[in-house]
Image (tube, rainbow, N blue to C red; front, side, top):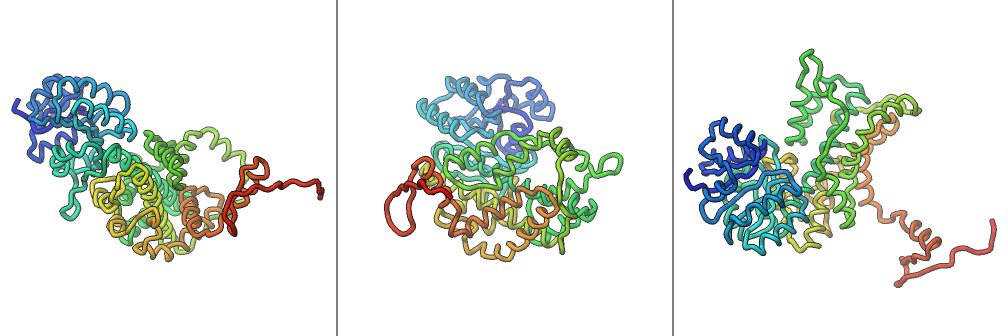
Length: 464
């Protein structure tokens, strides 16, 4: 085997697609997997001269400094592979983890590798199988030295938008995997909003499949141009063998892999309000209660009226657009807060460039997000670039009103409205909470009209 530019460890769907992408760009690749089946399949696809039979052979076939891209299951397998590779590597060699690893695990592994002189990168990869093959979006964090050695390969195989690679070094530590985690949280939210819009049209307004499809096609032309709207149209067009829409035969029980839950935990830890991401994760959890939902459908009474929505395509489209903008805003708030707390100094404009092509949440809106000056003092929805959301707000409110009157749960769209309205509330009801906390637990409170911390003896002998 000739000396190779890079190794790909793990030849599952994503790993093999990334290896093929690298080969198509002229790189020599040492491909390896512990699975003999994966190695055989990759060889059978015409890449026999690149497949290594052992990890030792893979490492020995690499040019110095050695660059190894791991595309394996997140968690303990990554630690096991690092322990396997470390004795085979030399100081200055680079290991990149392209899986959906938890960012704190990435930071721990980075420190472990630094002790051994190994450059370690945590690389968030978005785009699925097709993106991995044709050009993904990649968010790298960790060793800057490692990025300087291997980043050129990653930027070459990444998607490009207007000549800019959708791959960048985000920040030190676990920043790359943190950003990918929050990216997935925003993906959860946007998927929920799209699904709710579809559901409301089909089962609330009782539009036909063809009418629903035309709405999606209209939205794509009128401001909602994005990858997820594109594949929504694809899904709606797909018919089963009997000629009926395939999507309507799919069981309404959703799966998830954990990044949404991690995003919620981070938002609680960092005190960032991300209600739409929360509702999206919770909806997937609740969907597993299929038997209880069937029982509730039979047993629980609803006073809901038939759903009505004037100018449905335009109104629902505007509501969906605003919901998606607010989902981006929530995710960006969490990234900005983490960046400040971890001293990562993440450039949100760079993130917008990285997400403009190749990734699941790519959309026309990212061009506008790139121009926004986002900070903890000015979240996305308060930036002048998005001043037009005031024109979309009535639609989001009308859709929620209509759904409530019809007894149809749209928690994603409702939470987006709550997020918007919370930012409008100069006076929140938590003053009453503080009074109650002080009343039952002497937890104290602060006042509007004077400085200091106060406690009041609320209870008296007076009876009413």
